[in-house]
Amino acid sequence: MLAPPAQRTPALALETIADQMVFISGPPAITAVAAAVDPAVAVLGSLGLGLIGGVWLAAQRGTQPAPAPHAPRRGIVLPPAGVIPIAVACIALGGVFGAFDVSLVGWAELSERPWLAGPAFSALAVAIAIGSVVTGARTWKLSPAARYILFAALAFAVALALPFAQGSAPVLFGVILLLGLAVSPVMVSGILVASARAPEGRVTETLAYPTAAMSLGVPIGGVIAGAALDSTGPAAALVTIAVSLASAAAIAAVGEALLRFARSKSRETASR
View 1 (tube, helix red, strand yellow):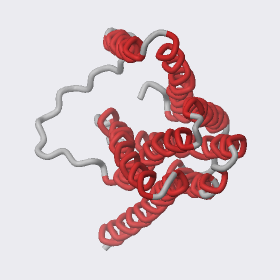
View 2 (cartoon, one colour):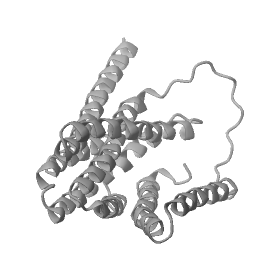
View 3 (cartoon, one colour):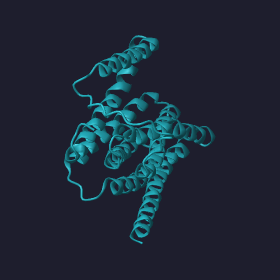
View 4 (cartoon, helix red, strand yellow):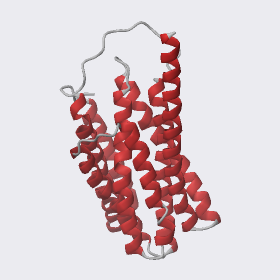
C-alpha cells in the first residue's frame, strides 16, 4: 500500500467513501437518463464511463508502487493464514449487499413504488460514506479484526429490524441509514486486517482476498434473497441480510479463535 501504517485507516476510509459516492450518484443518474432518454442510452453510458475510468487508471504511473524484485517461481500460492478468517467472512459480507439489492428492489416493486429502490441504495451508500469518515477519523484501541467482528454483530442487530420496518418507507429508510453506519467499519476493517497481515512482497495479492471474497458473496446473497423473495415475500428476503451479517461475524470470530489457538500451539512447540 502507498499509505504508511499509521495512515492506513484514514486512507482506506477515504477509498470506501469514494466507492460509495459512485453508488450514491449512479442509480439516480442512470434512472433519470433511462426515463428521460432511453434505457439503452443509460446502459451504454455506464459502460462508456467504466471504460474511460479503467483506461485512465491503467495510464497512471505516478501513484503505482515500485515493482518488487524478481522472486523465484513458487508452486501453489496459498493465502496467508492470518487473512483466511476475514476473507471467508467477507464472502458473507458481500452477501449482505447482494441480498440488499434484490430485497429492496422486490420491496419497492411489490409496494407499487419501484422508484424507491434507487433512493434506498443511495441511503445505504450515504450512511456508509458517513460511517467511513468517522471510522477514518477515530483512533481505535480495538484491533481491525476485533472491530470487524464487533461491528458485524452490531450491523446484524440493526438488520433484524428491516423486516419489521418494511411497512413504512420512512422507518425503513431510517433503519437502512443505521445499517450503513454499522457496516462501514466492517468493510474498512476487513481490508485493514489484510494489509496488516500481508507478508513482505505479497501486499497486493493479500489485499485482493477480502475484495474478491466480497465480490463472490454478492451474487450468492442475491440468489438466496431472490429465492426468499419469490417464495415468501420481501420480509423473508430482508431477513437474509441479517443472516449474512450474523454469518460474517460468526465466521470471523471462529476463524480468529482458531488462528490464535494455532499460534499458541506453534509457540509451545517452538519453546520445547
